Length: 395
View 1: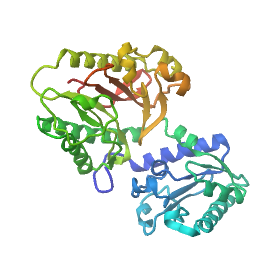
View 2: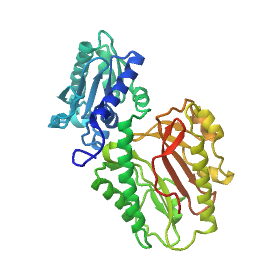
View 3: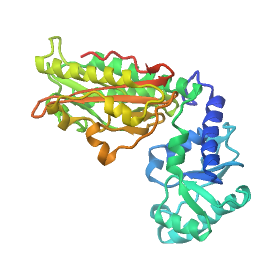
View 4: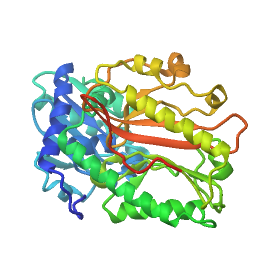
């Protein structure tokens, strides 16, 4: 599942497919190459990971991918060995950082050296094309590249488009991540007893993920009883009581770096749910089932939203941010908004076979005490949505 864990994933196939997807998008836009800073994008394009969370906020690692030419990984000091077995990486160089942490008062100087090295790669492999896509860039870096006559283009769109359609090796990798996540959920369910704290219950998922070769969890979204509403509170020291709903969203980056984004709500205790709890759960189940049945290749985003399940009016104030969203190495394009939010945030597009999506539901009533959170991860095939997450949806 990582270099330290057995996996059934064909790494060579995975790497070749993903790199080809990136280069296809670059060619389609007539870009000479792309410069990647987002560690998730670097992982997608190169399959080489290094201190993924730390490099989210320390600009000490980046990759240059020529549309027609080499893949050059600029890695953190002393890390060249991490790419030794990766056949799609042609060269590893030390990364030059120009942020204030690394460069201090020499930031402008270091940015100049950095830009000159990137411009030299572009000149050597771009065939005269000076159009370079970049996914993340600070003002100092933009100015330095422009001083080298580099035309900076939007790399975020390139990578979102490349990552949209999953290949067979990607799906195998995602299934392994989901398997690790669902093992963690089984252990959580066994440990869920009155008196356990939210933090202690959540820690079981982390421990299982690491044990099985996973990487990190992006949020702390597990709450109980009255802390389930409003949503987006993080787990804390509250002791879970008999009769509480426990609602959570895994947001787990598991083995192979793939995301398992699954939500469930459970009833703590041997008794039956209250009528209010049962009704919230029934609405959430109906929303998930209705919207999964809608998913078909060729359907537009706007059509999906228009035909989407309508929550009761008093549940709308607590609706989730989206009806569904893409998923891969993390939450990805597209975001399919509620009809109520389309005018402010929504956009159109076409659902395609090979996309992987998470279908969402958050149901809590205005003035209510608790909320139910459900989420199913699916593959969009030629005949519709196939569940990838198989853990039971029941309370």
